[in-house]
Image 1 (cartoon, rainbow, N blue to C red):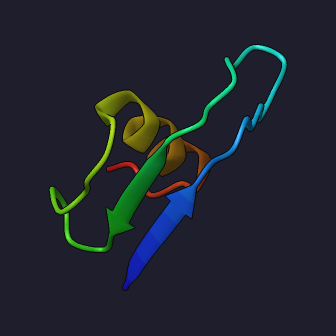
Image 2 (cartoon, rainbow, N blue to C red):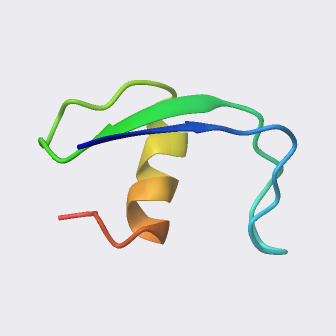
Length: 50
């Protein structure tokens, strides 16, 4: 399964900055693309971080 997330001025919580990036998440570890900080935030948010 792959998840593609395209963000347009998204602010998830008050403590997070605004995001306007695109990243791709995958079930396979290491097969992510996009800004590393954005990928890590969404892996954490979606409880996919190992």
